[in-house]
View 1: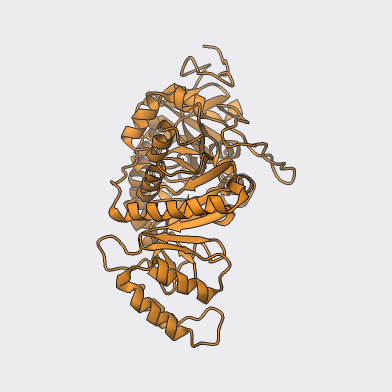
View 2 (view 1 turned 180 degrees about the vertical axis):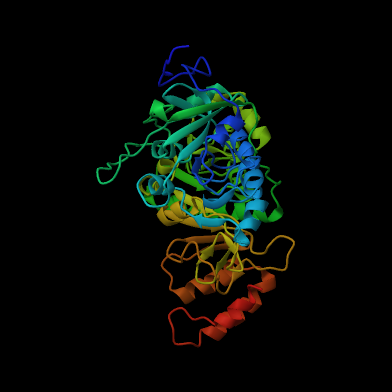
Amino acid sequence: MTNERPPDAGIVIDRRYGDLPLVDAATAAATIAPDATVLTSGFGSVGYPKLVPLALADDDRDLAIALVSSGNVGDEIDVDLVESGAVARRFSYQSSRVARAMTNRREVAFSDRNASAIGDEVRYGALVNPDVAIVEAVAVGEDWFVPSTSLGQVPAFVAAADELIVELNYAQPRELQALHDIYRPDAPPNRGEIPLDDPGDRIGKPYVSFDPEKLIAVVETDRADSTYTFRDPTSDDLAIAENLGAFLTKEVDRTPVFEDAVHLQFGVGSLGNALMGELKELDFGGRDVVYFGELIQDGLLDMLDGGRLKSASATSLALTSGGQDRLFADVERYAEDVVLRPADVSNHPGLIDRFGVVGVNSAIEFDLYGNVNSTHVGGKRMINGVGGSADFNRNSLVSVCALPARLTGKDVSRVVPMTFHVDHTEHDIDVFVTEQGVADVRGLSPVERAERIVENCAHPDYRTDLRAYLENVKTQDSHIPHDVNRAAEWQQ
């Protein structure tokens, strides 16, 4: 086989090109130093390496790896590898039960990062000194590879690492090449504007290039992704979708920004997926509906198949097993409307601003003044990383926080007097939506925001107590009145 590079458009005709260092996973893992900084592909629990992390988990050396991924990854990394004790430090995102527990016990030193920035932090900043990148691909040559089901910060990671290991996965269709649009922004201070005028446009290539001297191993596998499992929409989900739809209908008619098109983003998870599925029936008055976000979920496939979506731009195919089968069976058709690009493009603040995105993300809780906690229970116990929610909450034209007003099956209000961990401040969020209603808090003072949130978003079981708290603290001579001791009681 010659080192033929795949065409910039079209489908690769083979999996392997050139004289490649084919080895098994254990051999590849043995090349990694015990204290190495390892960068992995993976975003939205798909597109991550599988066999080499498992081999590292079984390695009998005393490993203390610093592990960096640009999004959540599957069990082979965030359960097997982490649980083996091989990971001393973890960057960017985690969401598994095992990784969560070890983070809270401080057995793994975890540092949370925004999805849009970690590529630059790894390559140009002082975050880590990267040794090796391990990535998943559907085709590989001596100086290029075609990624699989996610991109994340893979181009930046490959450029930053001294060495490269590629897992060539035969369980993923090679036709995934048709989805990829790999564009890497220039380095500061000569970074120009990203030349993307429409989310459905393509400005890059379908493969990642690398220095051929970096490639130290290619490992073949046919192990499938750890795909998502979304629950069926609950009555609260459906009520939130109805309230969100009513708000969006008024909002797109209110401002000329949405005269021609509405650009939407939804956070990952069962609620976000349910909102996408329900909004496919929403009448946007003939306007084009475009998705510009992080993740393609099953609900977006429903919108595409129903002709309700012009195009969808993201960095990962965060699908269920059924959704993945559905896309894999017809990749070329979906590629007419779906684009996968690196996270420093999909989550770029300038592009979110340029397209006037309406960003819809969930959280653990929010407080009366509009501060949002996405990551910690009780202000101290880590649940997951912040991911890309800050990118969209902070830079969207309209930022929406949507969640049920009460924790399902628990006597716990998700609207609280004061959240003791803040991922998104009151300056970041414009609108709150629960199954109870909508609180548009734009232009309101802190106390006015609190009054509207209590009346429109709080669950009836807690509304009286929240009103009483607010009436009590309003007697204070302060801009943002609080009773910290009483607020802390809500966090028990």
